[in-house]
Image (cartoon, rainbow, N blue to C red; front, side, top):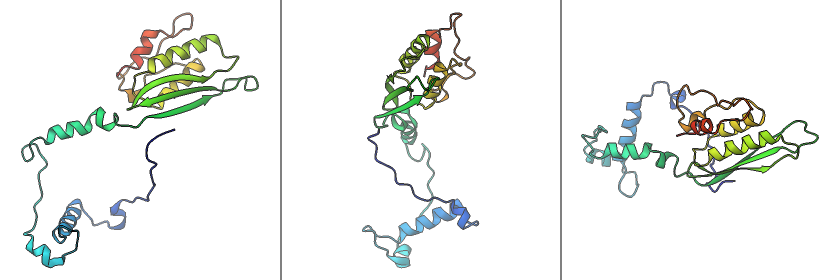
Length: 200
C-alpha cells in the first residue's frame, strides 16, 4: 500500500536509434534555437525573432561560473533529497514453511517512512513454527528498525526462517567484504553481528 502518485508508463527510445548521426551538441543547438524563436508567452516568433535575439552561448556549469552550484549538487545527491522524501508505504511478503498442509505462511511486514524502516513485524505466525526460528526472526526484525529499506531485508528474513546464513544488505551501505552473520554453538544468531549487518 502506498500514498505515492501512480506512475504512467510511456514508451522510451534512444534518440540515436532513429537518427544515428545525432550528437549531444546537435541536440543542445536545436533546443537553444527553439528558445530563441519563442517569445515570453510561448508563441513561435519564427526565424525573425530568432535573429533579433543575438544568439546564445553554451555555459560552463562550474562553481567558478555559478557560485553555490556545488552546494546545490551536494543537496540533491544527499540522502534527505534522494531517499528521505519517499512517501510512507507498507510492504508485506509471505514465506511458506513446510509442511504446507499444517502451516499457513509466515507473513512479514515492513512499514517504511522517508526511506527508513519505521516498524518490522510478523503479522502471521504458523502454529507449528519452530520456537528457535521464531526467536531468531524477532531478533532480526528488531535490528531492521531505523535502517534503510531494501527488498534484500526480505531475503534475510527467508534465510533466518530456513536456517541459512544471513548476509549484509548491500543497499544499506554495509561495510565491504563483511563476514556473514555467525551463529553460536547453540544455533542462535549473535545480536551484535545482527547490528553490524544493518549498520549504515
